[in-house]
Length: 565
Image (cartoon, rainbow, N blue to C red; front, side, top):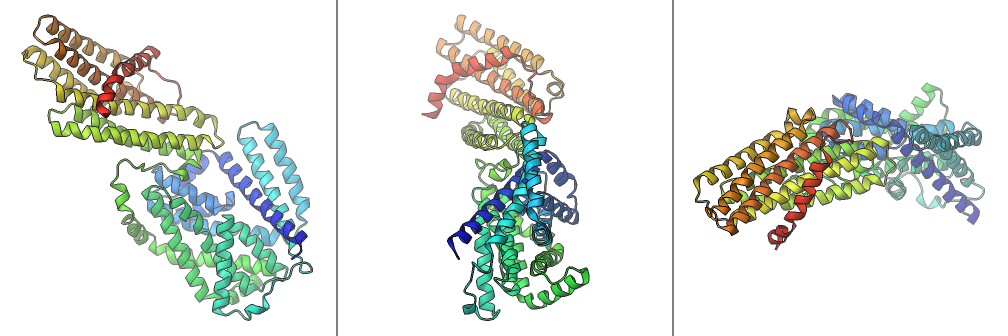
């Protein structure tokens, strides 16, 4: 290989990968919520999931992107594991569309006549589209053009006059030689993180006569295995559900590879017959495109009856991870790659955090010391989860976002901040109650118990309150504030009448403030959660109420040092 042909080869790969990336990212952003809606509503059965996975992968031209998105949909609760397996199987069929583009278009048309106008049109749409979907669609069209420019450069680099591969040493298509080329396919796909790119290299190499069809078929099988590298990478630091779906994809691809290698000779014979039947001729690139499609179809047909048993097996995996409440269940980078789904995942994770924060608050109000102590652990769990939420939002913000997502992310953070405030106040209250002596005055003791009982009721009702959902948060907060002021007046009166020691009076005031703030934060969180569900950014909570809560946070800061020390 000359230096010029090597540079041409490397440049062709770079253009191909760039085109694939532009196509995938542009189509994902242009689709907006359509991708989410398709997977949410078109995957009710495994068969429909297979069809949806096939169509979406053929559209975005990236099985890796669909796999990442599917893992995110599982995390976000839109897909069950069974449905996700169906989508993953379908993505294998859809991924063969790249082979057909290369085989039928890349070798039969003047690619520059098709590619350069596409780049020009895409650039025009990008320039005139601002940050909207038209610009994203322009990126996709530009990627389509760059994709074919890359294929054209690859074709030129595989000129047999300048490139010679020492294949004589491999002899015939023995099992060992086939396994070597399978490994080449695995490595190529894993390194480039694109089965489309490795298949384009293989098809152009076979079409140029550099490697025989049998070795090209082995590379195709290896590329099929190599696509699992995306899933394996996705499993690192992922949630248990994402790990299960990714493991299912790996097992499926390995199963296809074994069956394909065992049946390679009859498959190649069948591929030749299919090509003749369809009138596609004996072009090596077409034969490999048919083979790529055939082995994935056979794999899906064989796996279809096993989807439910496989899902049950996968459910038994990674159980230990689910026992740790401080690990996010719905947030990982797979979800962050699809901003529309990131909001769904955030809603679910915030709901989890809200449940833990409410448990901490309710435990702090309990008369049982053991339940109060559990609230300290819940407080730390909420704090840990909120750190994960903050990191996740930062990841999402690095993507190109639509205006609705941009507006909703701060609201999601505000919800989490309120839950964090609930758990923090629960810790403050727990510490206070450990140090307080019983109240001797019967009327004051009854008032304190009634205030706590009212707090328990509001904490339980806030998440599903019809009053909050219809914009009545301010009224609810006002009524709760009146209850606090009444209790505060009773405590101050008891202190002035010497029915309550001054030190105890101050502590009881702190207790009432902590209880008050827990409920306020719960109501704020419920109101904002309702807004987030409607994708409305504006708040119905008065600014002065928010400012009052801020002031209470500042007032309670010294007590936090006691809790954490």
